[in-house]
Image (cartoon, rainbow, N blue to C red):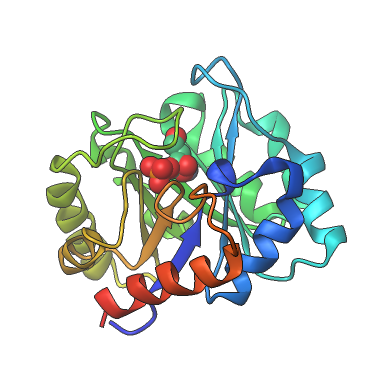
Length: 226
Ligand code: DX5
Ligand code: ZN
């Protein structure tokens, strides 16, 4: 597979200069911007909402924005993110009373849709909606915080989803999120993922020149994917 996408999670970026951080990782070769939305209810943390997504668009960010909703409920906020410039909107099936309806709402709002699987969430949630998802996101940590360690059982889950996607014949991206670094990305790709979220693996190193640091870390991840 040649169309791997790197998705830096801005959760670990410097929020005081978010626009510049996003510009720099994109200039360094990142493909999409992973945007973690937490509500202090579905997960025990509170982050950013549609206003910040809109601010990135107004700042001039044209790359796809991959909105990962860790909120409950999900339907109320979906149209707001679509209006704010989201490209993908993914949510956790446990957080929606009507998964099929939420997926349709995302499509009707003009965005690509996806389902997110926590480490203990079964893949059976995909059974009747493969035709309505553009992305499957496998969590390799429990959601809520950056900087956690990769849970190895996610690799087998990735293999199972890869098989489901290939058998379905649909064009569905397979994204991994949590504890992804340059030293495990090749193994995750070999299991079948094609889209890689990395937060603490990219941001927050406090390097003298972030742009050069981002160039080298993103370059290293790309090299690992060859
Ligand atoms: C966790 C978030 C992740 C997080 C990943 O709930 O969904 O996107 O930012 O951070 P790292 O790459 O540090 O595990
Ligand atoms: Zn995420």
